[in-house]
Length: 266
Image (cartoon, rainbow, N blue to C red; front, side):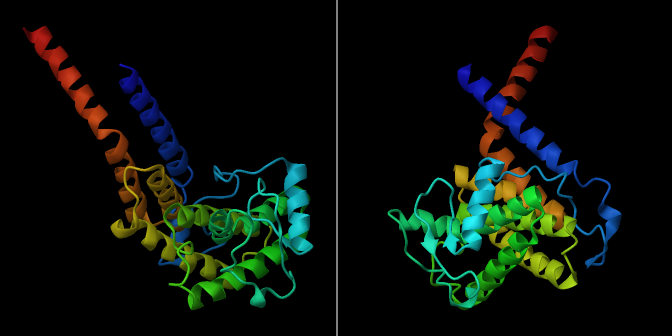
């Protein structure tokens, strides 16, 4: 019985998540025509995005962003070590750096582009455009790195790391849109990048089944699908979640209902 209650709770959680995401976009389909983006271009707005990114307090996040502007790369607010870098010369930044006492953790969250999330959040808090300018420098540097070192870093395309990066990119794009900074070139960059992420996440060879990493992948794929109006991806992701958690529960409940009906008929 405890397992049944636990799975039923999981089912409720995922259904609420799914409905909260799908509800964001139900009236926006006509705004996306033949892959051309109009002024209200994406499937969700910043006010509708149930941002899953874990931020500290506003005061702490602004302090982190200020340190990033001052040349200290912080990838996770719970990590004390800060990597010194030149914020004005991002084309020399070493994206393969091994740093801190936990270099793999540092690499994971560096490749998640957490600094961009911190900078975007700080812009939301303060409206200081310096945060968005530095976020754009970091993204442009990472894009150049991604194209040159695609197969040399296992954390570049990593299961839940790619999922978390997808959500950071969506959040950053929505902040840029609200700030009036999402011009056509920026939108196309984000669209192409998130499409690449969706294709990776939807590839069964990259999927971590029966694992919480797979849940991160499913969640990110649903967000991307609604953000870019790619219906085939959100359907496959939602089915994956349902298959993992709830088919045994569905079978049990079906037997319970059918058994109850047969008992009444008898």
